[in-house]
Picture 1 (tube, rainbow, N blue to C red):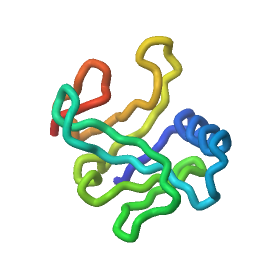
Picture 2 (cartoon, helix red, strand yellow):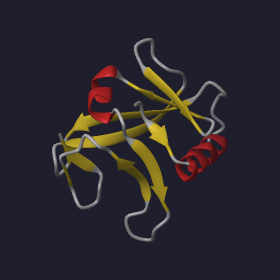
Picture 3 (cartoon, one colour):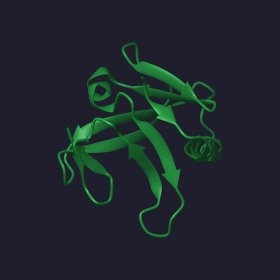
Picture 4 (cartoon, rainbow, N blue to C red):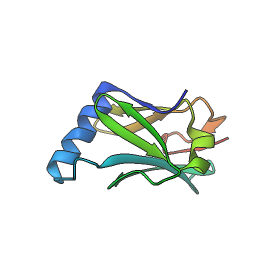
Length: 109
């Protein structure tokens, strides 16, 4: 399955990459960490390049990387972007989440 990204989210990521003048090898690192209302929180960072053991995906000209442990929980996830006054930003449509907090920033598996 992998991790995918919508065109809207990819456009936002490419804009961020341009604004921060990142190298052509840069990629979007997605992962999880313990914490948040529901147990796990999503993380997004800019990485210079994939690590040797990363899962690597490409969607709409954005390279997405994920460490193996996070990938166990994120396989099948779609990253979207919502332009809203309240609660806007990146949204994770994660089929592995059994429950999530109301803001969508954390989940339980």
